[in-house]
Amino acid sequence: MPDRFQPAPAAEDTAATARPASVAVAVERGPQRVLAGVRGEIDLDCTDDLRRALLAALEVSRRGLDVDLSGVTFCDASGLGVLLDVNGRAAEAGKDLVLVAPSPRVTRLFELTDTRHAFTVRTGTNARTNSHESHRHALTDLTRDD
Image (cartoon, rainbow, N blue to C red; front, side, top):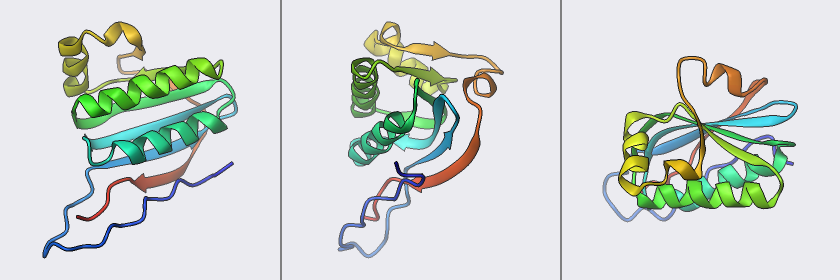
């Protein structure tokens, strides 16, 4: 069971300038649940890496995964697809996925796609505090320099 999620290997840099990382995940392991704090922009460029990180976090949890989305500044349909996939995999494993404090951009995506009902969502000021019990284990940038 990994304690640290590693960034994906960088692709060869053919451009003169590097693109800054768009999303990062901080993972906190508790005795029953894992909290994955996601921040930044979730788009097609990072969804494979995000999916791998969330599924790895789900795997090491006993009961489920809480995903803190308060720091997400952008999320497109590919990001929504990752969340739906991880939600389904959690259910298959007898665990649950809880989305914690989704940012206004994520909430708007749920409204536009009518997918809010597909998730368990915790909102409010205590949502993040009440979702987990543990210490920070890793911070991973999931995008590559292009």
